[in-house]
Length: 296
Image (cartoon, rainbow, N blue to C red; front, side):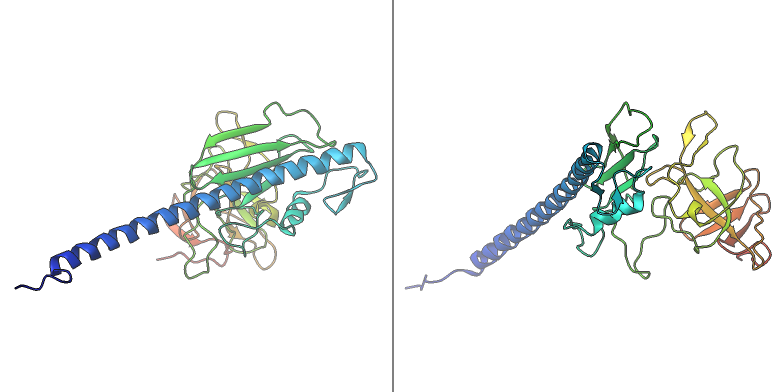
């Protein structure tokens, strides 16, 4: 008689295959669950920040002797600056769901889990924004204060928005190439600046400007100019489609000069260089005009 105890080889192979398939499905399901949970937590942080700001500022209206964001008296002549508000939340119990070592509030709207706080178009009011990395949607809410110069008509907005590189800040060796949304100036000094779009093309009708560090580090959210259609452009505001970038830096004597007048340059975000269009020469951003050398 044949011994029919145990499994045949083909049966064992089928069992192993089924286990592998179920394991793979389980991993995909788990990763999807984690991704959804992170996005929901980041959205919750955004809503909590807006709610807390509204509560703090509302209390200020009825209690002039109160302290606002643990930093400023409510009877002050102006609203707390954006840095003070951001520091208040970054020192709170809120955490970035994508990386607990990352700040909750930052200037780069395209860092995963980051909420951006800036001044709005209306003096005395704030703009709070968050980009959902799951839905490619940018959420914007306006928070008014007793210092607001006028009433904002549209207090909230949702719009389609896809970051070119939506990643956490990484080390230099693994950091993604720069884009308009994660631009950092070549150094913290003064220099010649141009306003460019996400492809590095200069804003029509604009030349180069001598500018201090605050032009390039995103701390001039209310400064604006106009595009060729007469629309306001805010190159110092997080999430803007235009950005101040530094081309030439100041010389050792403090002199600032540029080759980019009259729309004559294109900035290359990927490698931090700029090209002078009428000569075709490319230079490393941040070097002064009297010390720079063309890149071969």
